[in-house]
Image 1 (cartoon, rainbow, N blue to C red):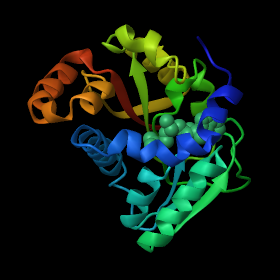
Image 2 (cartoon, protein in one colour):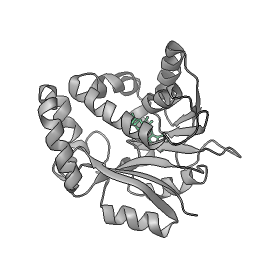
Image 3 (cartoon, rainbow, N blue to C red):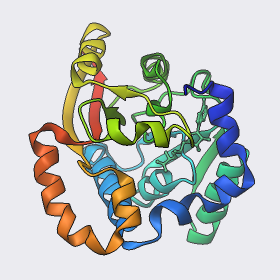
Image 4 (cartoon, rainbow, N blue to C red):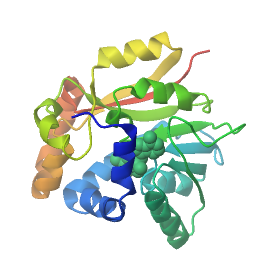
Length: 238
Ligand SMILES: C[S@@+](CC[C@H](N)C(=O)[O-])C[C@H]1O[C@@H](n2cnc3c(N)ncnc32)[C@H](O)[C@@H]1O
C-alpha cells in the first residue's frame, strides 16, 4: 500500500532503523557488492567535476555517498529528513576525519536559499514516491551540473517482490519511457543511463555466497534491459 511522505520519513526516524541501516544492507558479501557498485557508479558519474566542487547528497541516509564524495575532495552537503540518520553521518565523518555539512530538511523543500551546487546525487529515495518527478524538479533548481539518481524499473523482477517489499516502505515502479519523457519535456538532458541489479537486492542479501556467481549474469541481464534499477545522470539542457 502507498505510504505518505510522513510515513516514509517516520520509518527512517526510528532509532532502530537508522541504527541498523548499514548493518542490514551492507554488511555481508552480497551487501558489500551492492554498496560498492552503487558508490562506484555515483563517483564515476561525478568524476568530471573539479576537486572542491560543491556537491549535494540528497536523502543521504547514513552518508555512504556523502563520505565517499568527500574523500574524493568534493565539498559535500548532505541533506536528510531524519536527525537519527544525520547523527550517524556526523559520527562517521568525525571518526574518518572528513568534512560533510549535514542539514536536516525535506527533499520537497530543501534547506537552501541562495546556495547552488555543481553536482548532486540522490539514491534510494525517489522510488519511495510516485511523484518523484516533483522532487527531481525541485532539487534541480539548486544543481548547475550533473545529477545522479536511481529509480525502480517497472519492467523487472521487482514487480514480483513489490507486494512484500511494500510492507517495509512503499516502492514506486517506473518505466524507462515514463522517466525519459518527463526528463525530455522538462528540459533535462540525459548524460548517461544504465540498468543494474536484475536480481533484486534481497537475493544478494539472503544468498551472499552466490554473489560471485550471480554478478556476471546480473550484469548481462541488466545490460539487455532487465535491471531492477534504472540509473540516470542528467543536467539542465542548454
Ligand atoms: C533508503 S534511505 C537511502 C539513504 C542513502 N541515500 C543510501 O542510498 O544509502 C532513504 C533516506 O531518505 C530519507 N527521506 C525519505 N523521505 C524524505 C523526505 N521527504 N525528505 C527528506 N529525507 C527523506 C530517509 O530519512 C532516509 O534516510
